Length: 186
Image 1 (cartoon, rainbow, N blue to C red):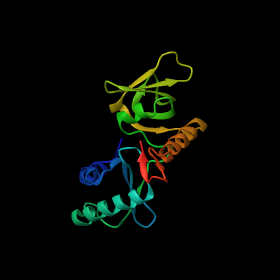
Image 2: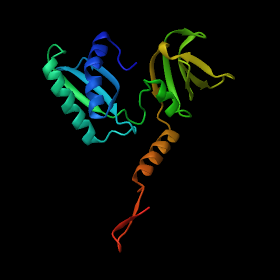
Image 3: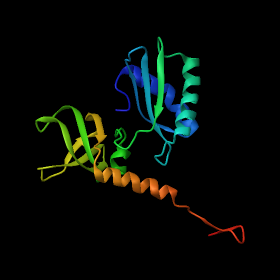
Image 4: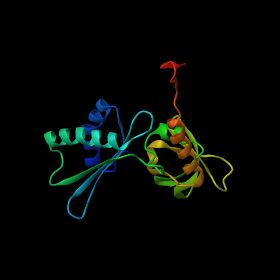
């Protein structure tokens, strides 16, 4: 799910070590056709789940250097590095744990209970499966992670509220300063 094509997976083999060395993790990579040139889209994040613009620029520069040296893409392409965004793709089992309680759309590569697409509230991941509470179903639907083709959070008010709360929590200082004494207060 982090890549779709064999070329995507070859590029991940080159880019993952670069991203990791810089302190980032590639969430998803897609090499797509474009109007004038192909587009290499990389969604990445820091270990804390953030990805400020400055980090996107730093990672793009590091990736660009290695791609220029290795030249794995024939022809011209545009490199785009960004954060996964609020309605992010879910590409790793830990994403399903981290976003438990949020609404998501999942698509699998085969029929299961007569369908390939599921929409519901994420209930986590364990033992190689992801679980989702689908409307109208009494039991959780458990899908093997290996069957997933696409999974993405659904943009809802509760997701926006959760994102705002996370951003606000990052702004709260962990240490206050007593300006009369110029020493940190524990």
